[in-house]
Image 1 (spheres, rainbow over the protein chains, first blue to last red):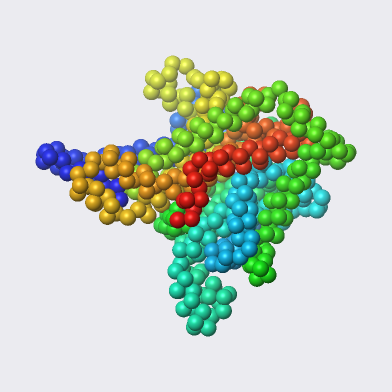
Image 2: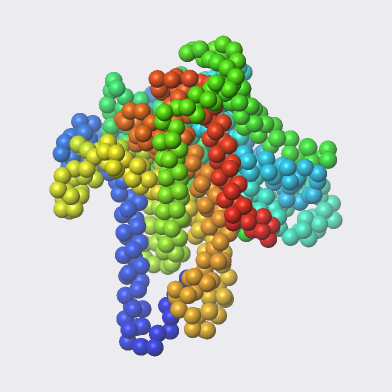
Length: 290
Length: 290
């Protein structure tokens, strides 16, 4: 499409041969890329399907020496795993909801109105984007320790929301600015107040931006590790990322279960991604890449 | 002014409550003296800072950080540029390829990192087995234990997990380009390499900027890959400044919350400086305001 790069070569025969094999060449490249990105996770799947001892066998074998189909059932029947899964779902969905509810008004307002402090606010958002929970983890721990919120869902939900807010405001603000002002003015003339205009007119128009912000926040919260590792002490309250590490510790080594649990954690996200991929590409374009 | 406050209040509350306040707590911790159990014993003045600056491994850590950030970001951008071109083309197997590229993004970094410690292992790693089977090497390589290979292995995994996001941002940029420019260039007889250099790359500039800034931030702050791949090596010989400050508090002989906080302050200052200098170099304003 945009990068159709074949020149009008002077030699006819060569062009037609090239044209004929070109789709195959592309498919071949595609296959190679697929192999590179999928291979480590294929190893993961194969390791989930063999006894833990076989995972650490030396020399290693490509295929399981014994196929152990029961691992996934074992993991899904494990109460600890179900508890971690619940925590992850709770934390990721709550954080995503908070980010959307908080980011939309801020992005809308800064995109539409010139007010004193607008530049300062945008600068604050940019600086927030540069902070990661990892670099502030000691400060975060001190704060929640003093508020007596260590080991609570609230603490990690708030942390995930706050650190993903900047990206959402950034993306959404780009979308709001790209909507022509006439659209909003027409709605105002029809008697819509500012909030109703935002809700009924603007939000449907920025759907790709919303999808992008939602997905990014959800993934980031779903995969967050350091803060949860530091703040959550009850085994049952840990999210998946932290919890499943206890399948392989100094005391027990269940590599098969660790990897089966990981695959169960990855699959929903990949399906979600695949379903909204089109919106995602559109969303990144209009929002961050104007 | 007051209505602005109303629309921005939730964002400001979240940013100040969970980003700025921990930053303040981090500063306070950095000038405090703590007992092993985390109780504040009193002021430490600037001792924590001078301790960090006098730390024997500081220069190794800073050198590692520079290599890690520069090499990972540069390789990621270059490979993603090529990959985005391929993703934009139409061929059999394209969807599968796009889905496979999503997987490392959807998988938790901790798990991917743990998976790679196994794949790269000296005794039971499948990569050694594969390379021997292909007759590329004669005996196993200690990817994670041998000082010559540890950083390179970390960088490889770092690039692998950074590519998906980057490739998608660049793909979004490619898709947003007007096609008529390319048509015109081709009619004028421009060669594919000329089109790429003089039209595609300049038009892709905003997308490359967004991708590099976000990657700079993410890679600098990246914790799980460096921490996990390097877990078995004692000391700080392959740590970046992020894992260095974490280990100072939670996993080292020092066990010092204060020193860790001081190192955290240096981290925040460093990333701010790097991003600001980068934005300055590439004239950020001109891009965001057009």
